[in-house]
Structure formats: C-alpha cells, structure tokens
Amino acid sequence: MFKIGLALMLIGLLAACATTPRPVVEGPISPLTPEAARANQGVGPNERVRWGGEILDVAPGENQTCFEILSHELDVSGRPRESRETDGRFIACDDGFYDPAVYSKERELTVVGTLTEPETRKIGEHDYLYPRLRIEKLYLWPQLSAFQRYPYYDPFWGFPYSRYGYGFGRGYYW
Image 1: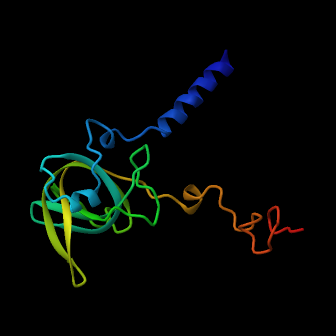
Image 2 (image 1 turned 90 degrees about the vertical axis):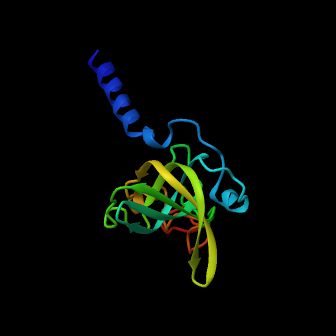
Image 3 (image 1 turned 30 degrees about the horizontal axis):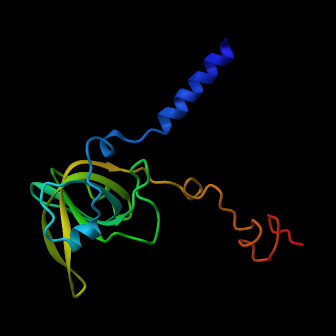
C-alpha cells in the first residue's frame, strides 16, 4: 500500500510541475498572428489574442509599462518556441510599473490581451507598424539553463554531430 501511495504522490508532483500557467490559456483566443495583424490593417480592435516571444525593450512610463516583443510561435503550454522564425514584432502595454531589471531583454514573455490601434515606430531608418495590445494577463517564463533547453545535446555524439564522422558517440569512430 505504501508503494502505491508513494507512486501516486510522485505522479501528482510531476503533474504539478508540468501544468501550463493558467493566465496564458484561459478564455477564447483568436488565431491571429502579429504578422497577420500587420498585414490586415482592417483587423478590428478588441480582438483577444495570445502572443509571446522575446523581450526586446521595456519602457516604463508614468502610468503604464510597454514591452516591445519579438514574436515567436507558442507551444501547447503557451511558451514561445525557440526558433529563428518570427511573426514580427508587437507592443504590449499594461497599467503599472514593471521593473526592467526583472523583465529584461531576451527573457521570454507570453501575453493575453486585446488589440488596440497599431503604432508606427522606427527600426533604424525603417518605419515599422507594430500591432499593439492592452495586456489582460502576462507570464514571464523562468530562464532555462542550457541543459534544460537542450537535454539531449552532446557535441561528441556520433554522426552527424561528431567532427570525427560516423562515430557512435563520445568521440569514438569506426
């Protein structure tokens, strides 16, 4: 009986660790992407979306804080996928103060919010039309170590990763 109880407790603990943060999955969400919102300037305001990506800039103002985010596709848990592909940039603003030291550049953020009027800003010399969100909920993802991000990465694992050719791992080769 003790083993069954212990097994159930471990399963419960693992399930608790693997749950998706509630703020990023609640309610109806439009499938609209930031790139589609830029292309279709006629998209109605107040459309509810869930977008996420890498923080590029944090601008705390007197009454609100705005995040400039480089958008990435979200996985099933709502976390931005690490990839070179992007859906463009967007701006997400919320009332109050968010510390730029905590919400720092290159951190992953997922926001749920409603579209407002787009905003044009310069990127270098280029005028860029940013979709803009009023944040309802946001989630700052914990930073992952290299091992957590790439648990199966081993630079000495055999072909095609080994510089020695057709090895079967740890630098050995035929």
